[in-house]
Length: 128
Image 1 (cartoon, rainbow, N blue to C red):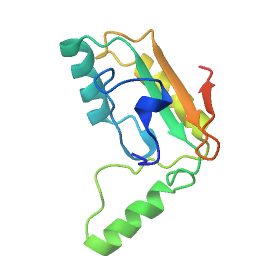
Image 2 (cartoon, rainbow, N blue to C red):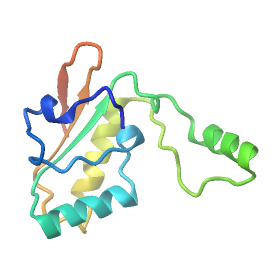
Image 3 (cartoon, one colour):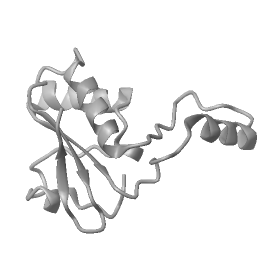
């Protein structure tokens, strides 16, 4: 979701080379799985790259506190979790594992995860 990240230049891609799906925190949600499933089954993609980044607003976010704040302001608790995490690398590892175990994705062998350092542009692959 972070507008500071130019995914195409980060991976040396041109527009049209990849389907880019963004959301807050890079969280694997039902909608992300839906989009990946469509990308793979209807459009033939075979690789998934998941990228988190440093200085993320989701880092350290407490889901329960966030939901309580929304409920206090709106009178309704959100039906989804915000998806805060304590460590970007650990969350990438967990998310990659979720995708590798997802029965809806036919191409699960080439799923990789990275953490981008937004201060220096370094991209570090997170081992599975």
